[in-house]
Image (cartoon, rainbow, N blue to C red; front, top):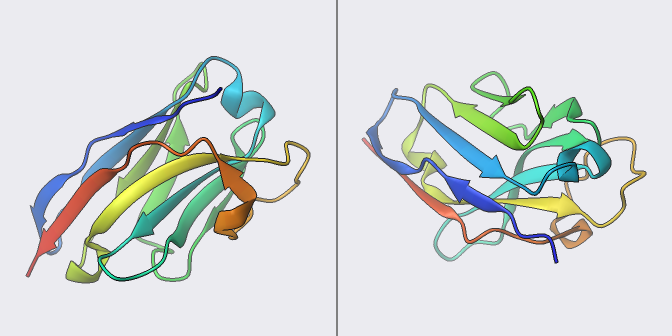
Length: 127
């Protein structure tokens, strides 16, 4: 059973930056697409960003496009979510997960396509 681990959340002022990390067992991100989602209090999980298998083809949600950026380490064990120009509306618990369908060519925005969710990391942006 694959288990992902997120870290890097915290409290930051509006306009600030944070970098989240998502760590997976070796080769997970080589073989499976992955996604970052977030969930604010009282709301459903929202797609933030994702990568196809091989940590390629980045896709971003409309609300974060131009502010957030995905990257990986050389071994593709860790996927980073660099979050810049943060807004209070970005406050949420951030989760990463892997796609159930390894051959999907583009990251899916659908939360039901993902599994092996991490425990989440809290991001709080103050105004």
